[in-house]
Each structure stands twice: as C-alpha cells, then as structure tokens.
Amino acid sequence: MQELAALASIVAALSVGVISPGPSFVMVARVAVASSRIRALATALGMGAGGAIFGAAALLGLQSVLLAVPALYAGLKVLGGLYLCYLGFLIFTSAPQPLAATADSGKGSRPVGAFWLGLTTQLSNPKTAIVYASVFAAFLPASFSLGFAAALLAAVFLVETAWYALVALLFSSSGPQRAYLSYKSWVDRAAGAVMFGLGLKLVTSAAKP
Image: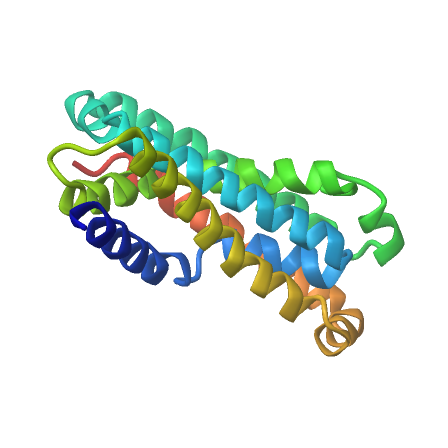
C-alpha cells in the first residue's frame, strides 16, 4: 500500500511538470505540423524514453552526484543548451525552404530519426534530471522492491509519452497543418527563436550558483 501511494504521488507530481511548455513541447509540435503524424508520435516515444532514462538516473542517485560536483552540472547545462541552440538554428534557417525539402532532410526525417530527435531533445536539459530526482526524493519510500522500481519507470514512460502523443495528434490534425502551410516561414522562425532562446537560457544559467 505504501508503494502504491508513493507511485501515485510521483506520477501526479510529474504529470504537472510534463505539461509545462518547454523545448520538448516545441519540438513535438513542430514535427507534427511540419512532417507527419507517425513521425510526431515517434518523437513522442523518444520523449518518453528520455523521461524513463531520467527516472532511472534519479533512482540511481544522479542528483547527489550533480550537487556534489557543481562543475559537472554546469557542464551538462552548457552542452545541453548548446544542443538546443543548434536545433533552434536549424529550424530558423530552414524557414524559407519548401516543406518537401524540409521534411526530406535532417535528423527527424524518418520515424527512427524522429525518435532519436525526441530522445536527445529530452535529454538535453539536465534541469529535468534534477526535477525528477527531487520528486523521487520527496515521495519514494525508504525502501522499495525491484517491482516497484520497474513499475515506476514504466509509469514515467507512459506519462511522458501520453502527453507528447496528445500534442502530436493535436498538431498533426488538418487544421494546424493547414495553418502551418500558410505561415510556414513565420512559424519556423518563431519555433527556432524559442528553441534557441531556451538553449541560451540554459547556457547562461550554468554561470549562476
């Protein structure tokens, strides 16, 4: 009963965090309107896999390592931020290109590539690892079974994947896609600028104590 209550509390807390807009939301939404539903869903699966990896890291005590070695945490923020800036730059500079050229090139052009794009985008923000570790630290029982750990990671994967799959389905519907086709260059510039800004914010936060 204690493990079940802990599992419910962790899932509830993470669900609130997952739906908050960030780089992952921008990426899934952009793939959905610019590419296809199957690629957007593959990206959502990548986000779920990234969440499960963060969950496993939290169970293994990643928070303690990052807090004990501030330089490591700062370095991860710089690397992750630079990666987000790179993705934002690619999206921004592809804005004038026809949709066919954009869809047929790049890392997310196939479902497998879209999965890896989702995974790397999710893992690019080490702050998410701290969020996971903090939630786990707050609600995990003092001792837990291997079955509980497996169920927890499965729940994390399902929460992350379900939310981003919903985003993928919504933005890959005909209405949003028609709007995107009408204003592609502006939408891509806006999405690229937002992604670049989020990456830059992550890089600059590395200098803060």
